[in-house]
Length: 277
Image (spheres, one colour):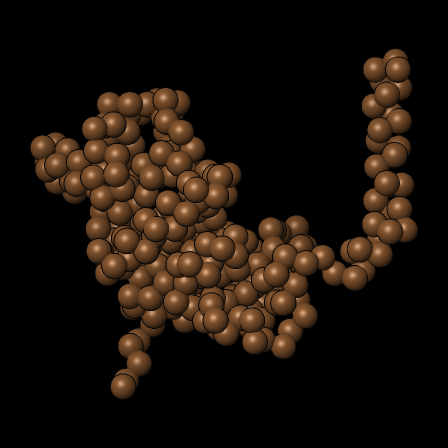
């Protein structure tokens, strides 16, 4: 069977901040109607990669494509064409505190000038129903639980009926039960809407549950590309330790030698001195 053309493509993408290399020659192809999960330690560049895909960041070198569009070369005005086809769940939900749930969810429709007020209200109700929150339209974010905020943010991400859904650490800050609910929603939305899904996370339970394909970013490059089942057969110490949540021998040796305690003692002593204790 002929393989579908990728919907997203990164070619030799490099990015550094103040000399700190985050992405070092990244190549990636994301295929339609699949859920691809990018795993890796905190601070390794997973969120940075997502922001490149929608043009919130520009690479220092390399190219990013969304279908026929070279995102990395588009002006802010022309990026609107891409962003109207991509839903983005930001880490921390990023809801507007001064807006009601309905106003938050409807915001992308207003931004892209889609629909009349009644149509926007109906679309809002439909997507809130999909995530199990219809009836909360007039609530403000401060009245919602962490899990509800995530679901409102999900509703906002899908209200424009995107081709692609990007999730930035969707289970961070949630207890295991609420995290599993978000995982189930990711699976449900992919099946219901037929979207192409890209998730970045360091939550291995989430990665295994939602991912058709799991790839790992480490020190600026992808070091494995596998299925959930295949991860356990990869002969790579870095991958194995991350997947199983195990510290390295070097990290354990530092603890054993008391280097961690020594490094924090001056701060503790100074803090005591400042408090006069």
